[in-house]
Image (cartoon, rainbow, N blue to C red; front, top):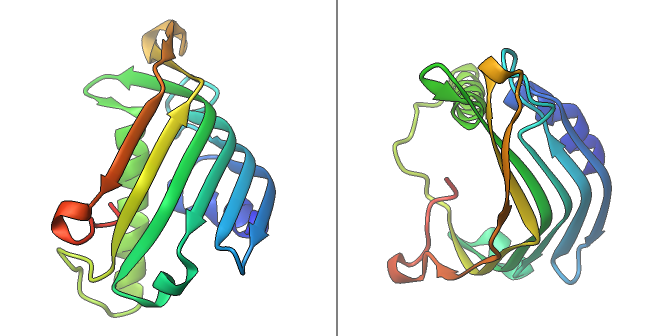
Length: 168
């Protein structure tokens, strides 16, 4: 997983992507990524878009072959998020554009038609972001900006009402 993230991540996002360490427990359905970093696209001044000390995921492993994947918990610890505005866009829109462009190119290369809805859904029982900071930065200021603590976030039962949500 570490090699895949560090190798394929930059091609998909067109940014630097790095994970320091990965601990995967296949039989329990858990994964822990440590020292994750998602860089910024070309043209943005901040050093990165997101860094996190730890990302923990606990998946119902039996659900991986089903139409709805059940995720018991996603916990993002100590994220550092830099939201950078540049003209009429921002770094996260640019990253999403890069990801969508890569996905569309892959579908075209595989001869698949673009789908407006994915058949696989996810149900997230517990999503937690804790001990984070967010910075609003401006490219015109060299990527510098205003930093604030991010309140802890806990969302429960994402997708439950609709029998699962799209991965997007």
